[in-house]
Every structure is written in C-alpha cells, then in structure tokens.
Length: 179
Image (cartoon, rainbow, N blue to C red; front, top):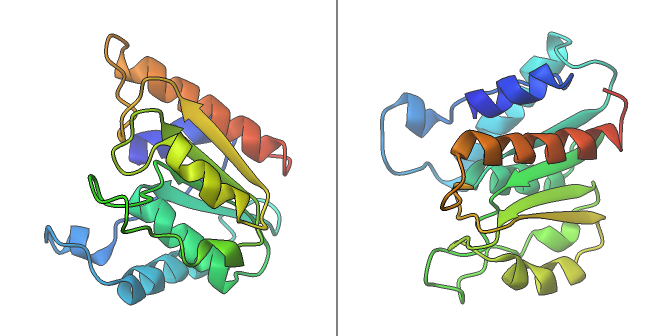
C-alpha cells in the first residue's frame, strides 16, 4: 500500500498509509473487526486533526481487508466522507462463495470505487454484480482484465498493471473532488 500511496501522491492525491495492529505486532491472524475499525477511525481522526487532507472532504480505502474495513466505516457513517476505494474487495473467502461479506454494503451512502481483478478468487466482477445492484450508493466497478486478487496478470509487468490501477483511482477521485 505504501507504493500505491506514493503513486497516488504523485498524481496529486493526499494519502495516509498505516498498518493495522496485528501487522505491527507481527501476528499472522488479523484482529477482529472492532479492533480494525477502531484503528482505521483513529487514523482518520489523527489525519483530520493534523490537517493532512486538503479541504474538508475525505476518501478512505484499502486493499482487500483494508478496503472491506473502509466499507464498514462508510456504512457506520463518517462525516464528510466523499468516497471509498476498495482495491480487490474480498467478497468471500477463496472457494467459499456462500460466505459473503456483504451485509453492511446496503447501508453505504458514499460513492464506492471497487477495483477488481477479473480472476480474483475472493470474488470476481461477475460475482460482485448482483451485490452492486442491491446497493443504494453509487458504485463504480473497475475491472482489471486478466488480473488476480493482487492485480497480477500473466505476461504483463506488475508495475504496468499497477499504473493502470492508480490512474483509474486518481481519475475516479478527481471526478468527485478537485485534488
């Protein structure tokens, strides 16, 4: 995410990156949702306190679980939330499409950008489509052709694929708020 943050910053988007407690504690198993939510909220509050964002509008997001936690925060409500970016939304665990992680999504009001690999084992764009149809928030689905959950595409340099993802995210943000 640091590389992604730098790429967005180079495109004029103010970015703050952070690690969840289980990462800083060098644990393999993620903390439960309340701990992850509290950590994310703390980072948002700190960034706002130190005026790290231009203006008073805020976009939040993350990769995989970080994007899912961002949608949890969005569903719970954050003042001035201009949008959410989910890179590789983990719709379900791999090979367990019956275990959907979507109960909170209908509560979202802020616009949502989902960047999803065409071959993502955590949920393909086709699997996301009916979920998106049930949401009241404006949702943009950007599909990375041939990509897996990490946006790896066979036969294409990773940096080239990631540049395309960064361009899509920066353009989506710019379309909602002057960066």
